[in-house]
Length: 519
Picture 1 (tube, one colour):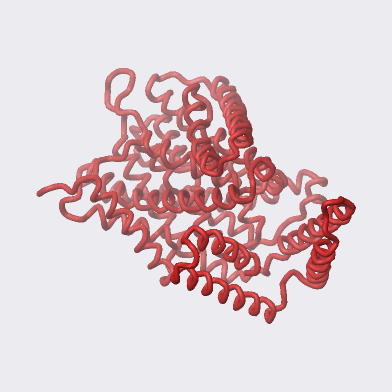
Picture 2 (cartoon, rainbow, N blue to C red; picture 1 turned 120 degrees about the vertical axis):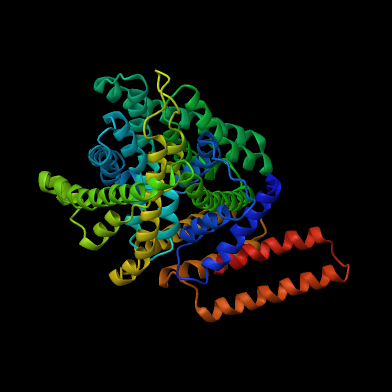
């Protein structure tokens, strides 16, 4: 049977991304699950040749921009305020899950060595940043829950990969040193952070020099790959390099580039991350079929049961760990109790239940070496790949389908803090603008009629902010109708040949920005 060429498969995948995204908006099914199922369906199309995905491609193509973007849009203040729960999840829980899974794997496969079992535990231990964000961010959950989940997913990949590489090295060479592993963990982490910050600093220097929007966008797109490749070349944490670089760049980006560059950079990054996220889940579905081909058909049932058991162990360990990690620091420290009172059980349970596995688990399973140092095949490699896919599917389907009903049942109150901070920031910024206007009014080039007009606009804005965060609906509707009429006139002028398309696009962008501002 003839195989479809690569270009046809790429176009087909793009069409599937569009169709699944459109369908997900009309069905009560999380988009990642639909994308995985779509990838699985593609894998069963006759004539489609689906080679095993190179793990280096997964690590290099997908992870750097996804991690960099997640860090870039993470609040450093909120991340720092929640560093204790994030650290307990991203480091403590990864190690606990790796140990629990290793013990379970040894019970299920008595011939499996401890090194291989720990490698399996490290593979399935980190919840996936993409899966969690794609599902939870669309639900009405407390802001702190999202911060903790996103912060955990930024760091846990690094800790899991360090445990994974240590275990694989022990399995391949037969040598392991606990002291060396601990030292390497801290050295790899620190060096990864330094590399990420250095790359971000260089990017900031370059964008300040370039003064060109397209060049600035390309620099931000290249930065995560530069950070990843640099860290990988000296064998330190590439994950933390991307995380640290994204956080550092966001901290200084607003003062480094102009408004148009910020708008266009955000639009480009939104598109890039959307496409990468969709492709990640499609690949998960495709690779599930590929994984099944690596083992004899008679073993699939037993491996599926082993995957179910190991997946349940990973879920239960998290369900136990999160409440203990929430209560224990408050029991041990009066300062922690004072500064951070015990939260309600609902957000604690939500954090404990949200632990979908994804592309990092798949890539690390695929990256297992084929042979040991002795030349013998790496033990249980095919079985680990199938078990990993079973854990991914179990957590995605069970937890992905139950999160939305759970959040609706919990009925979390609306978040007010964000709106309060936004109103305060707008009010203070407007007042500073008024002070600057008063200073500029004394300049000889200033027309006082312009000053009075702007003062009237600022007074209206301050009065609006002092009495509420939202413009009256009647006024907003009037503004929308006015902008719509202006846009229709611009199109009419373009159609009549009075203005060019360039003029239309320039003025239309101004109207669109105003439309976005008023909601």
